Amino acid sequence: MDLKHLRSFCALGETLHFGRAAARLNIVQPAVSAHIRQIEDELGIKLVERSRHHVFMTPAGRNFLQEARSILQQVSGAIDTTRNIAAGTAGILRVGFVSSAIALFVTHLIRHFSTFHPDVEVDLYEMNSHQQLEAIAEGRLDLGFVRMPIQRDQVEIKTVAREPFEAILPVGHPLSRHPTMRPMDFSDETIFMLARDNAPGFHDALLSAFHLNHTVPRRIKYFREFQTAIHLASAGLGIAVVPRYAASIAPQHIARVPLNLGDNYSEIGLAIKDRSVPLIQKACEIIDKLIDDGIPADQNKNLAQTDIKLSPTMRRGQSASYDAAAPWRRIY
Image 1: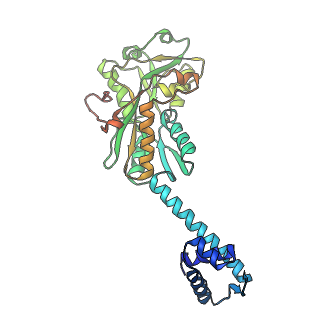
Image 2 (image 1 turned 90 degrees about the vertical axis):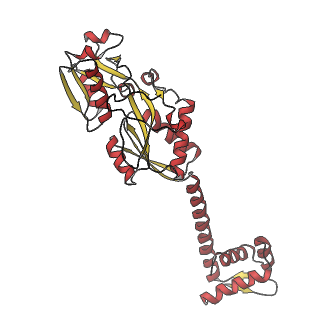
Image 3 (image 1 turned 120 degrees about the vertical axis):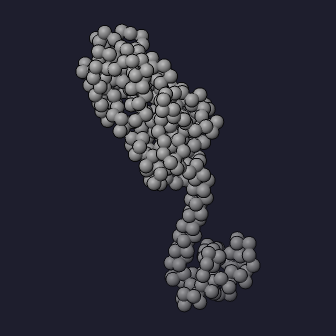
């Protein structure tokens, strides 16, 4: 017994006429009769009663009709789902991210799939950059938004956005009135920044900027979350140095001052292992389009003030580079 037998039985059960069942399936009537007989022979059960002018189902036949319909529906659904997965329009996309990437890319990615490809389920995992690369290399994540510069064998990483740094400090602080701040302004200050094991590229970029300007802050305290550094700065305990998108979560009563760090930026990279996977390829196409079109400005007042540069490197097919002597140099 195979699917053609079940299709013949369902067509007969729905039409109760061998000729009409054959016409529906575009086969000859003897073929339908043969399929029904083969099913009954295999089951050893009478499923169809025939008279000179009528065809009707036995109780066992009516039950088998329901089961056969269910099987054919499941097979049809499996075929459709498989084709959609092959086309990148169905399945589960596992996305890792660092906090800044939420507003820049992740929400737009989810919105696009939910609108145009509702059969794609996007699973989100907030991880630091090294955790993401490990998960991607091991096949536990499909793609990730990481802080640059960072690299790992067997993982392709491309810069997709850059954002300037900001200082977060109390409104009454003398430096809060400056239009911009430079590294030498921190010489007598305590600064809060992300720990190196959470974001080595971010950490090294800031320290590189300080060293290039022959400046060392009085004290540096490290934290694992931007929110912690921002709230400590808002309490007047020091100055938080964060990317501009992270600064957008700061309370309204604090000051945000742009930092002039030359060519040092906070960079977001897209990390993937196998672009040939249809769903990953579809996600990359969406991200490419976001970069080409420009990510829509967020309605949040703070986010709308950001000055984020989207990198064209993905659509040019260039990989992000890392010069140890001058980390976080812009590559466009």
